[in-house]
Image (cartoon, rainbow, N blue to C red):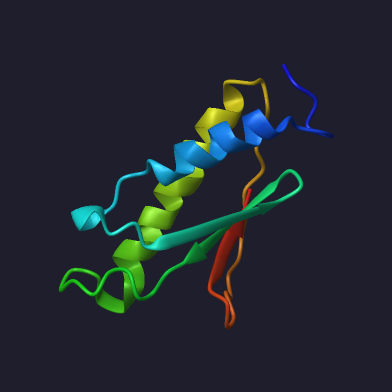
Length: 99
């Protein structure tokens, strides 16, 4: 297990890559990720998926949930308990959650 106070860059990158590999319809990957310190931010990319099935961005929001779940599971490999903070109002920048 690794201390969550100062995660090595390789661990953050592993978790980040796990999120990127989440499934999405037509492989649209309607998310953007960034990180600062030990926190990964997940943003909704509204321009990535204009399919008929993505009514009101609901499918894209579900895909963002898959990103978060992948990252949560990847963190557990290192004995970390990833805390997901869902945002109920994403505002202008479409920030969906932090982990």
